[in-house]
Image 1 (cartoon, helix red, strand yellow):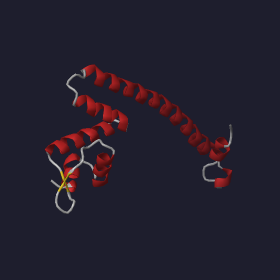
Image 2 (image 1 turned 30 degrees about the vertical axis):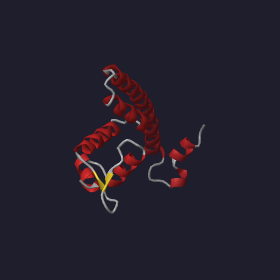
Image 3 (image 1 turned 135 degrees about the horizontal axis):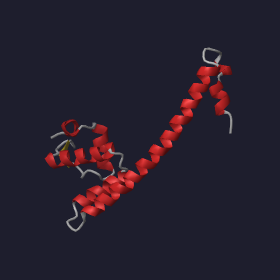
Image 4 (image 1 turned 135 degrees about the vertical axis):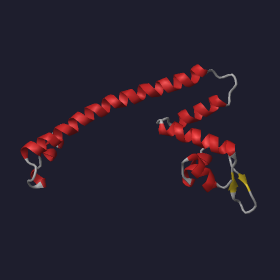
Length: 133
């Protein structure tokens, strides 16, 4: 199949396919006469796996590691679990940071609503709050 069909079947874009091929997450495509790339069902499966990993927020290096584990008969399930667990810890840490950020931004908006909303932008309390250390 051609690159556009592969991208559609895996739920991604042609530039993404090219990028993943360039960085080694996808094997190099077989080239037809004229240089057109061709792909098969295994490429669809692999690309869909990479896309799902990225949707879960795994980094390119983490995806590369997960892919290597799928091809290593000596790898253990706990290797994949440990990687996912480390990623989960990172996500949970970011959630704590985002909740604190949400509280801070909500305070900016609330202060603006109570003190200056509707006035001149130059007098907005958001700018006063953002200029404080």
